[in-house]
Length: 495
Image (cartoon, rainbow, N blue to C red; front, top):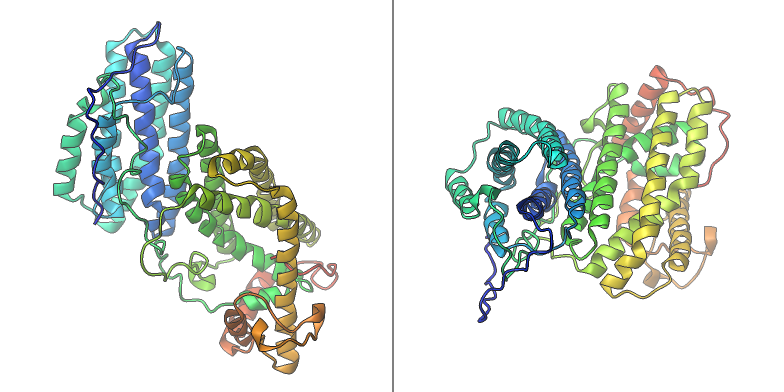
């Protein structure tokens, strides 16, 4: 059960922060409100991986980005006073919002967010607009109205979710949340900032995320056809087209991982949180792009499957991420997965365009635009993250080697597939042999050879092969590629 950790009690008298010169109540309120908007984002990132329905997964990622935008607007307004958006506020707000954060379930956390916190926050904004000068503080009035409008898509999603799931908020939990928000005057009063100051919501609790993200309905019905796609990749433009529809769809799994990074990245400057929230939303949209392209052909989740990169059936809870963990995760996505795929995506764009499938080519085009921004996030933030995480390395030189190694291992995998189809030889563990044979000088496949052996054997699964051929034929019948037999031979997948 999630419970608050024991609070550290100071023996000294609480010391309020000295109000800065030209200090105003609205500056203090803006500091409180930006903390609350960011806290709502932390509820979404902390709990969001538990969403199971596809629309709910999309909502968690989009709404976390909307909350980042709302927080950023308040921070920018506060800087105009002038004020420091990172100035501490009273720990009473952390205590109150932790009551909401520690919900019985993901659905209850969403219910409290949409039925209690957002209406309370909007009422505080409306109260300030009604009781402050409409000309003197017109910029704040404008921002507050924008923030209330930004909640509209969140409210619309929650109403659809309630109707679909017949959801009712846990009354005992709701009562605790209402009482907790009353303890901080419903965000209408500039409560003085006294020690202990507020830490990010959830940080001082023993909240743990589940190992398995929420399961998508019908996500486990399709046979695994990825070995067929990997084996045919270099020689078949039709396989490349199907692969990217599925691959983009599965990028929701990246967004699910990023929700976790965002929750544990509170050691980073706000600018990183904002940029990574956008990065995460982009990845979720890539997932929806892939699924939309599949649906253009009458296919859906049950035809290709979705298991959050194999994590859907995991048991237990995830440990908290350390700053170094966040660094490694951010490094691997920006420097290996994203940077390593630029050439591949570029020639696939050309292949699909030249074959007459403009919609698939456009999907590649927009993905490349987003990925260019994401690699820039890496350039901008990796060194800052290294310093704060206590990491010292030449990440650029490491990335070159890691990308080369990933490409080599991918080549070994394809070689293992083809060797198995020709000779029936399954990959062996490095301990099984010291003799080098075959492509790349070795018949030994690094990594999880048991999993690779299973993938090889999948190539002999007649049901899986028939399903793979059926999918290719569906795409072929509705949008034939004019270069199906003339497209260039391409390298194997980079990883």
